[in-house]
Image 1 (cartoon, rainbow, N blue to C red):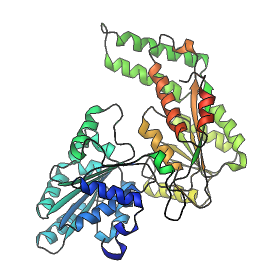
Image 2: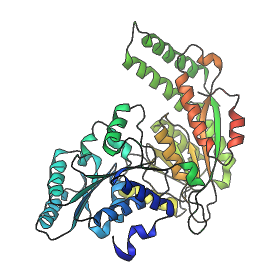
Image 3: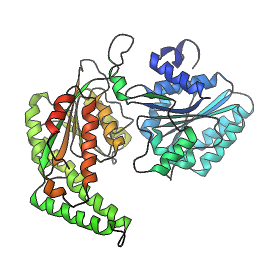
Image 4: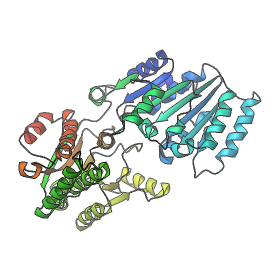
Length: 438
């Protein structure tokens, strides 16, 4: 990664700033950069900088096999070892490379490991042996928020003297302990930040915008009388077990989740989706529709089928090959829509996508920020993107005395987050100013 094709030579100015900021902190820190700003490209330059310091062992830990394969391609000149459960020969390859470097027949080793394998004792012991043979060990955590989860924290190996974390959303939702683990490992604050608002105003050297601007169009629906009744029952349960005399955190959590699911799966969203599809008509191309579960996905599938719209599906069930076929057909224009369920939130590059329809979203900022990011990558002929976000209207009577204002607040927080950086921010604010939203 040195010489004329060195990643450092091809960086944008702000990416140079990120690499330099990380170096100034002793090559330890977290880069908090919006989706689409080139975190992987910047990280490769960091890898190159470490390799110039002497012999090195590079560990890149990723959340999924799909993202791991992207890193394998980026680092291919370095001969990376692919480490995951679907590559049973990885240990044999690792031991062979370890022998070579221990005999002085190489200057570096590179391992790209999926986080569940990276957290195993077998990998950690081998990684320690590799680290013992080199001058420096660099740990790179991609989408590093995942590594704060208790089951993956072991992957944060203590023997890495250089550390780099990458994420658009590094803080873990409702997990202060996990967030604290990440801060203890990478540093209390990011060493460099490129927030979305700044990224939207940043130009490439050729004068083109770094990201595609977007319009945000919330769509509002109401609960049925039956849904309102179920919602209020969950509210009563939560109120009862929030009381210090009857305090039961698990029942409170279950009640909150039940109320939240009613909002996510509101019956009226089916007809509202149909209305939106009719409204978009022939302009419905390169669209992503995010669903909560299989029931909602079936509903969306029926709406698309009835209108003769060509679509593919991506869930957690498809093979890597099937997923790639859907993405390829979508990029080539053979499919107008991809239906997604618990997928396409991160690590998938679909620059052609220009319409996002969010039928259901959790209150987790990481989820909706990542989904927005899918729409903002640039592509030839793509001048702007559209985000349609389904939210549920309420009345003060529904919320009164329920103790479920937090659900409303999460929905409003998402609307505020999306609208703040949208091209039509003022219009969105005016449209929701007097609405009660669940």
